[in-house]
Length: 325
Image (cartoon, rainbow, N blue to C red):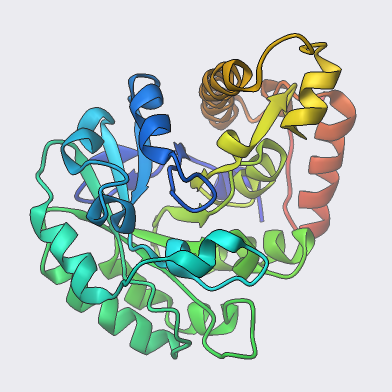
């Protein structure tokens, strides 16, 4: 596929929003003091944000404060309650279910462009059943945009059934956005890029310009690769957990060593890193928009050797890309 065919500005129906979008996410999972973090950073997250209905319900993030962003994605809470033995905080989640989610949705106000994610029940279901349940949920809130999160169909599978997505591609026209988590898109970087190209090609083959949302992906290198392969919207907690330096992602301790920030206390550095990461994401977004106009990979400001690797990856996946100098 040609990059000129698949990498472009797209509209999110109902919400009157244009892509690409980079969405800073907030979650109490891994961040027990997320209320304080959100209070501190919300003045810097004015374009878009993603918050969990679970955190809204339990007061970790106050509903009347989420509208500080122009665009607000409301996640269903599946991430916060998903069991993970390696994560201590996952063992202490509070009760959650579709009823709780509906309580949150019923209290939302149209004070921002709201985009709702369908309920992630955590149980594997055929794609058609997932879509039917999502349509029922979204039909209750027609004034808000719908973000359909596609999940694996079987308990023994960790990735989505791309063939089923392609076979039912026309049905996705009823949703504003098609979403998938990064890890469930494929079992390797190459397979994820190939699957993205397959899905985007299927959409275009039926005249559909549905934005594709990669959940849990805000690492700059991955964002650029998936963007070139047809994805449009990215969110994640990477910006809170790591430090972006020249387009690369480092652990906070490694970043402090590399930058010589030895004398500063951790709390001060955390705040500074979060604000700088947000500034970096804004810069990256502008580069993505410039690329759409110029088709030159030189718009991305990453070190040349890393950008060359990204180009190599997407070409191996089947993308025809030009503009390199």
